[in-house]
Image (cartoon, rainbow, N blue to C red; front, side, top):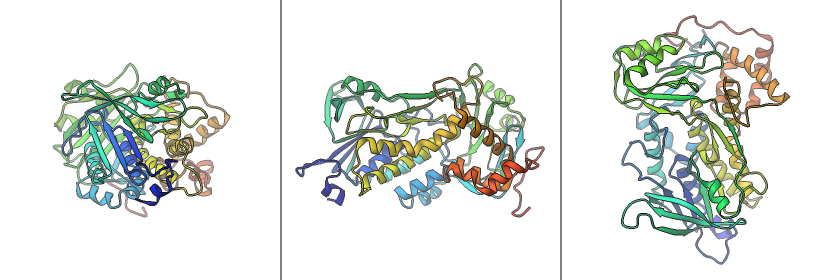
Length: 473
């Protein structure tokens, strides 16, 4: 019995068992369960599918076959939660890619200088990352899984959630409903969460939703290169989307030496999943590098498409929005356009925020206080994703508009973006903000502000740079 259990920090008295339920076996759910195991006698992860054996894609991850990156902010959070995890990730072969030195990058019509790396990302498959986390989390005997099980509702009323209503999807009891009582329910069921409907059904309010949707869609396919275009000094290639260049795409290295290729476009010009048309679509990018490579590379998988890329934030933190005993995390709380690669990092950072909120000796971890902490953990990623998407043509939703402060921020950030492909000072700080390892305020420190306000953009390569620059060049 640890100190948290002895002090009864969930307000459960009488020495009875404290139970927690996590809805969804996503990364956000697994890491939340890991944190809750320090405060509960039993933690049950309810997963509608069966967890795969080894590093196979999980059916419940609709974007699981598409590129994922682990940003530096997420790396720090995962290492804090699961000490030694990054060593395990490296040992499993996950590529560690230095930015910008290891990549050929383009945005807003400019190639990036391949300056020495100031941040690193991991680009291995989502399935590999989940399998490593799953192995660590379920090694804890406090945590168990209810696989092949749907959550169909909540137990309780408008003042407090007291558990979940389950329905088995397979076996002899298929379709039968049963109750699982809990002192805390954490919704980590992803962007398709049904929690707003569950809350309404017990008389509680559904949360206000902020939405912003560009209609971006993408398709991905695994390839193995047959020439040296992405070998040697170049780990991968990427063209970022912008209002002036809405088509994006690239190739990121996987743990087995292959590359996961992605192409994207906006509403009405979605990438195809037909094999030949997938390659042809790459011609929409502003340079033929990727298309030439695809023409000679060996395809190792079909093309898979994905179109649910809206930014959605559910404001459970607002007064009256949530009963006691219920919190949301991960994509169930805040969903980002996946093209920015923030979801995995925010899942880990949210678990750290949950741990800190529960451990704070100065404050009782009320539902609203914990929910505020989880929202704060996702705020910077939301500002980056929604801020960028707000400028894209055809963006719709109630979060599209902005006030005078947003207009000034847009003006300043536009100047930052003009300089970061070639300016070492601006590039280093901006990459740290984008990787969620430094706050946005770092962009307003004197060295950055001087470069942004008083120096013209640095010269950048006219063609894709084949090799990294040496330090000091």
